[in-house]
Amino acid sequence: MSETVLLADIVARGYAQPDVLVSTEWVAQNLKNPNIRLVESNEDTLLYASGHIPGAVHVDWALDLNDPIRRDYLDRAGFEKLMSRIGVTPSTTVVFYGDKNNWWACYAFWVFQLFGHSNAKVMDGGRLKWEKEKRATTRDVPSYPTTSYTAPDRDDTRIRAFRDEVLTHMRAKKKMVDVRSPQEFTGERTHMAEYPQEGVLRGGHIPGARNVPWARAANPEDGTFKDAAALRAIYEGEIGLRPEDDVVAYCRIGERSSHTWFVLTYLLGYKRVRNYDGSWTEWGNAVGMPIEKP
Amino acid sequence: MGQCRGHADREALTGFVPGPLADVAAEFESVDRSMRAEMLIEYADQFESVPATVATRPFAEVNRAPRCESEAYVFATDRPDGSIDLWFAVENPQGLSAKAWAVILRQTLSGQPLEDIARVPQDTIFRIFGRDGSMGKGMGLIGMLDVVQHEARTRLDKRKRAHAMLH
Figure (cartoon, rainbow over the protein chains, first blue to last red):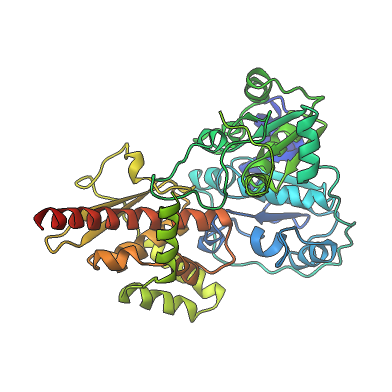
């Protein structure tokens, strides 16, 4: 089956960069392609061990992508080591997939972009679609020859936002998307009355942010991304974003917002979108930060 | 609120792990990361959703584990001896950790004294699941334990009120 046919459905959805997505069938046809490396990244780290796409390697966001001590991502040396371990060269096409509508796959994709590995794609629908189509899985963990990978220093300026930058962004009344649930956005407690909110001291959202829960970008039945028209209706029709806007997305720790970053950047073609990975656990715990609570 | 926090802190400090749960936690602490994953998957494979005789969909929000991304629900039914049986639903089919934790909680805390259930420290979760998981997952698993302990504490409070009325 030709590449065009395999990806026709994705191309028909009108995305700005349709080639950033591949279909499950495309992956199935490329399982033995040595220039493709499938990377599974999940919120629930048990999933890979319970069965994964044959040939896929596991990238655990906590162990592989985070600094073991500080709240930060791995550095250049750590990224080079990771890429070597999973047998990736700069010319390898890395295809990410995972659980929960590719939420964590997009997070891993985002971290890879901090090091400029742009030869990267996401399997539309992720684990959910692969499993629903009853495609093959295995518990065999593949082993690939180590590679020599030279990465640039991590670039935190382009697609990542820090707290003080977000404060400046907020004061300039630029666009922000809070991708948490409506209950988190309003600061309403979602727990039982006798239990204090864990993890964060204050509820609410960054003043000026608009709320679009991240999962609205996906079709719940199979985890695929909604088409461009539907996405525009949400982000442009409902909260007034424009492709030329300077946008900051955030959630609780920056993982859900990487999904929205992916959608705005690649599927809708926005030029300036940054993920604030400090997100609410930083903002809502920091002393003196402005908070809006309806 | 301050009183509640203080209460929770005291619970954490004076935590007690009932025997069956302590045995499970000790077993997990004795294995490496890979074996831990295998064992958790085995627990998850044993998961059975709450029977319709106990609860039916749509489940009540009060039963929903806060902060759990796998949409876990916790239910308790009373035993004649005053202890409880625990039941769970995990709506996300890929929520393996939630399923494993549900099975462990059900197998180790059902039938235990309510006072002991109320004192289980949150740290038990990390002894079983390790400390390298995502914050979201950890918070979700804590949320499941929260509801279990809420069920125990509610019954204990009711018991205390009944006792006070008698005296």
